Length: 175
Image (cartoon, rainbow, N blue to C red; front, side, top):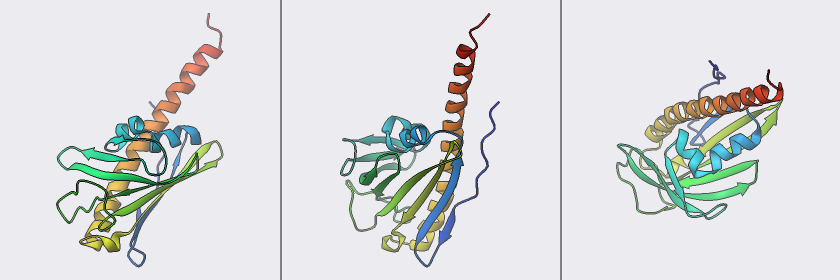
């Protein structure tokens, strides 16, 4: 059984209206990049994600059971290094718009860095001062990032360990 890397919890900065979490994932940057940019991979650990393209301007939704479809748009794209999404996930408001709107939206940015054969992934979500209840939303998203990123670590590390195990089996040449 593969044990998941333990990571610190998310941190809320009320002065700058941000939530931040940095985690280590024992997998190459390329695998983590796929997990945070490709809808079929995002859907395995976060919400069911649909985007109408790739890169800046791609838009779509992220759907969660019992919550609904959150409008989503790619705001920044620096291949294998950084991706940012704008979404209208104002938990305190209790309703979701049909499309991405600047008012009430926040931006979450994933930054990836290679470190000793693993990936340091940092997420920063900002813009909570523009939501209906900034402090309530900060706390809600803090707990959300803890839960969702722990799922990401388990998934990507499990996939990487299984790939390594298959590689070792085939590399040995067999009996």
